[in-house]
Structures are given as C-alpha cells and as structure tokens.
View 1: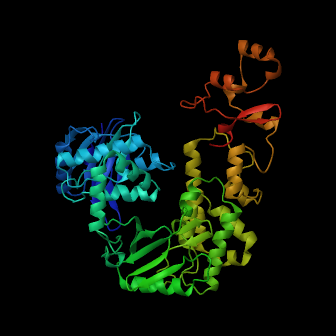
View 2: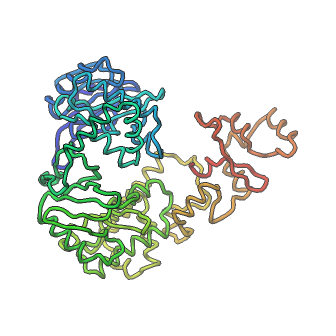
View 3: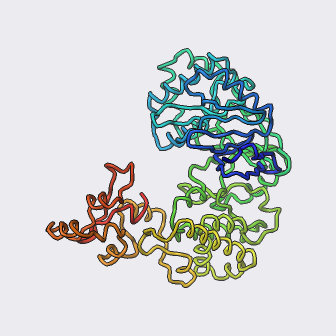
Length: 516
C-alpha cells in the first residue's frame, strides 16, 4: 500500500504546491492543507502548519462524543487520518429548495447547541463543511478554529443560507424552536451592526487574495486579488478594495461606461469602495459546464461585448467566463480594474476558458461567419495555441471515455466544425425545451437510427427470447423497459424514474439520447 506520508503539501505563491507520488486521489484542499482519499471509509488531512494540525486534533478529541464529528483513526505531527464522508455538502443538498424543512433546521440547531455545550468558541459552520449522509445525518468537518475564533452567532452559516435564499425560513424555525437562542442572535446583530464603509480590507500581496475579518456579518459574495464583495441590499453590493489605486482605476472605467449594456450600474463610490448593482444569475463558466453545445445566442453575446469594448476605447479586450454573469437583462461583465490600463487586443483568457469547456472551436467558427474581420484580428499564434490545447483535451477525454457510447443524434463534433458540416447550435431556452421533450431540434430519430444505435445486448436476443419476441404482437421488435431490464441496461437507483421517448412505432430510452 502507498504511504500517504510521502505526500508533501506546502504553500505556494498562488496556490498549494502538492507533490503526490502515491495513487491516493486528492479529495479537496483549502487554506490549511489538502485531503486525500485513502479508501471508501478513510481519508487523510495533511496540514501545512503542524500547529493547525494540533488545533484540529484537540477540537476533535474534545468533541469525540458528538454525533456530527468525524471518527479519527490516526494522528501525526502534520496529519489526521479520519472518517471519509461520501455525500453532498449541505449547500448542494439545499440549493434547489425554496423553503428549509423544519427537520433540517432542528439538525442544524442541535449541532450549534452541542458545539456551545462542548466549549467551542466558534459556534458556526459554513454549508460546505456540513455533509449529508445516506441516512440524512449531518457530519461537520474542519474544526481548526473551534477554540480560536469567537463566533457566538453562526455568521458563516447565516451568510451561506442568505446566498441561497433560505436564511429567512431558517430563522423562522429558530424563533419557534429556540426562542432564547433567537433573541441572543438578534441582540448580537444589534450590537454589531457594521457600516461597510468601515470594513478594513488588506491586500494579500502578490498573487494572493485580499484579507478581511471572517466574522463580518454582511453577506459575503466573493473576493479576489483586488477586493472583496458584500451584498448590502437585495439589489446592491459593495466592492471594497485592498488598494486605493485599484478603486480609482475601476471607478474610472465603470463611471465612464454606464451607457454600455454589459457594465453594472454604479450607485456610490469612495476612495476604497464602489456600490453597484447586485447581479443575480450564474456566471457563464458555471452555465457552460452544463451545456453540450455553444449556442448562437451565447456566442453572439460574447462577441458583442468584445467588439463594444474595442469601440469604447478599452485597452484590455477580454471577457473571462467567470466574470461574465447571465442576468435577466443580458450579459454583465465584472472586474474592470485593468480595462483602461493593460494593452491586450485579443481575449486570451476567454480563449483559455472556452478551450477548457471544449467550446473554443465552435465559438471561433461562429465568429468567422458573424464577424469575419474580427476573426482576422484574432487569427494569431495565441488562438492557434488554445485551439491545439482544446484538441488535445478532447482527444484525451475521448480515449478515457471509450467509443461505445450513445450521443444526441445530430450533435456536433470538432471534426464537423472544421469541415463546416455542423448544424446550428441551439439557444439555452431551446435546449431546455429539448431536454424536457427528448426531441432533437435538427432531425427526427428514424427507425434505422434507433435500431442501429441500440445496445448489442438489447438488439441480439438468441434462442428462446427471440421466439418470445415474435409472439408479442404489437411489441414485436420494440426495445421496451422490460427487455432493457433483462438486458442489464437499467442503472441502479433509477427505479420509478425510467423515461422513454416515442418515435413512431419505436420506443427508445431517454437516457440513451440525452442525460436528464
């Protein structure tokens, strides 16, 4: 067996530097260290700082009787071998809910009360540190600061619940189930009301994110090298900068470009902050992760942003996917500190992002058609490099997945695009409609297609089963649920959720046409 002690974890300039000569996969990493999966039941957390390793060991030991604590198998100067939790974190578990169930609120309150009774000073846990087991029991990880930070109120938990719009329903349950605790929380917020203008933000140095007090009660949205963003009203947020020159540079861009559709509306500015509209919607990187095609709508939206930047006199022409937000009012782009300062005529970071999502070739081919002059400007070694990177990534992915798989009839590949034989991509709205109906917008699934693409075990039934098929009247030749089950094609966990698409006299399972 590999020795996890041969794995080294150290702090780099921008990220953790990990040297892993073993076969143990990385399960996660953060500011304290990295976690590696040792088996289905165990993992090891390797710390950068031995002091933090000791702090977490002491916290887990103090709370070993608590049901939400991970079981510990072994400890060392810089590591803890503990129970591995194979389940979603609470943020993913609750994300699509519109109202928090009372049972969930009870479990969270039990955890908070037990933390307080154990003597923890940090009575808090962000949603990403709470895991939901198969029996719906909650487990909590990362207890390094259990005795270090003073959080008498679960600030991080409430902040995270607010971001997924479940804070109010949770507090409603708290007021009903634990009225004394609710009054204590109210009193704490009354005493610690924060004016965002007085929040100190420090620069993290070269390549590092800014630093600020994590106990700040304002809903935290995100941070980067230049500043941190907090939500201050339903439709407003504030970006507080670590350096005043960054504030000045971005404000110059935002205030002079309020007429541009992709620029967020600005309400107030000062030497170290900007109050602007809060953008409700996913960033384009998150959206494209769930798409199989780059729609014409998205391609045109990105192209419009880039060409408008050029016309408006921006020096840095780029729209990274993580900075492009899909809102009800169209695409909005954030982070404009260097828009008037850096000379960059080609959207290199966008090329890199699209290559990672395997959409760069599709985007460029659409640009050729929509804006040939822009394509000529972009046709550079940088573009060639990222197209080649995308090609290598797709080739590696194809090899790892194998060739025995079903695809959407008429779906495009990189070779289709190169040969200009691809069909028009569909918009996000059309894709949603397609997913619900199971229909291909470009062509009908014919009998010859479905039978030629059917799994071998389902098509070829020797001996007795073949004779049975002949005597089934109208079911002759159909690929039915029952036969798929016999052929071993039905996945575990899909009981009661099996869906089919009917095409004429054919019946074809939807999860062989598109993932639902």
